[in-house]
Image: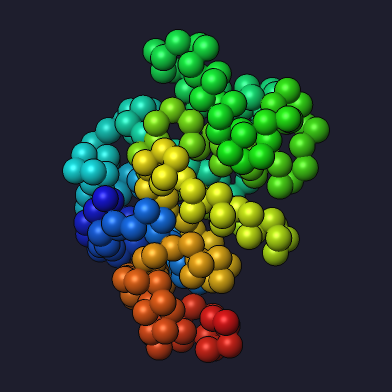
Length: 239
Ligand SMILES: Nc1ncnc2c1ncn2[C@@H]1O[C@H](COP(=O)(O)OP(=O)(O)OP(=O)(O)O)[C@@H](O)[C@H]1O
């Protein structure tokens, strides 16, 4: 469970997050909202790129904001960025192994786990290709495999479906749905693709201008007139 408790972030005079609270319990939870709503800022607070002015984030009861960013990773936090973090000159396998480089687990076990995750995302046969040779979707899948390595507890994906085709988005959604069963980790996903969010997220937090405007079961949240009005301005926008 992830407990976001009254998190506030300011950038000068701009309140990017205003006392945002939500208790995320679903295996896959969504964060949506219009551009500039504060979604990435919330992810940045949890991962340690931004320091909140106030508030707490507890991951399975552990106060994450008190931990140094590298300790959060060691504690099972993984995230992807809007642009995949794939090194062009490393192989696909090495790109996944980077995630567990610090771990004391023996090299053979780490390699076996990385190969297992690459098999899950369908890239086992490309394990020795270098990053530069991958398609955009293969880079995205490598990023997903990297996030699943090393006993994650919380995986956060920032717009993983950005730029993907309908079929690729469907495959990505299927993968994200498997993560909890395979690794035990909870996944939080930001995306503008409301269809994807409604298919894979049991619960969703909606932000607008740094405030929580809705939170709960995704179907209920998406039917909320406040969300329809805020998200894209029209009911058609939410279809
Ligand atoms: N480092 C920063 N310095 C100043 N302002 C920032 C910084 N990061 C974000 N902001 C501002 O904070 C607000 C929230 O930005 P954020 O990137 O979290 O929104 P978002 O919901 O993720 O948007 P998008 O869907 O466009 O990615 C925006 O007004 C943005 O311009």
